Length: 137
Image (cartoon, rainbow, N blue to C red; front, side, top):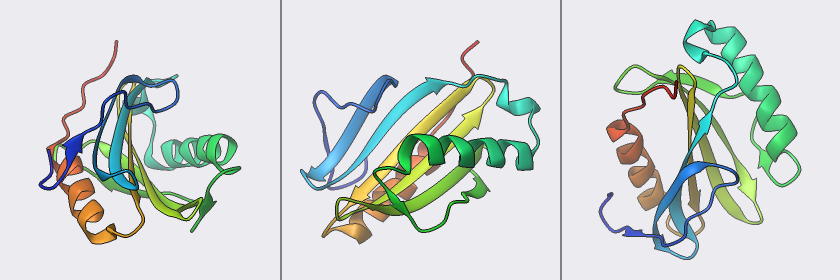
């Protein structure tokens, strides 16, 4: 757990399996969830994965979030899983959505900040660095 954060009881993240969260306060926190990917993402090249992720984000989140870009930024986590990051604003809250892919698993990490953006960014980086993803078979 990142320093300065406390567990969130009854965390929710859409239809995610195993939703959880940690927060500094009611306005600043990190929320996680696991989803089953419809295809084995390990078999998709970077472009195909990014295009599919961009389309899913546009259809599922664009109504409530004003994104900085309609295209995600592809990176790799320390355990070499691919991650696609989107940033934007939702109801005055700065939000970073990170989707991490391995096999049939997609982990979503939402980092939300209002007045404690630097602390949330450090917590988000720490959480992402410690994440180990296995595929749901």
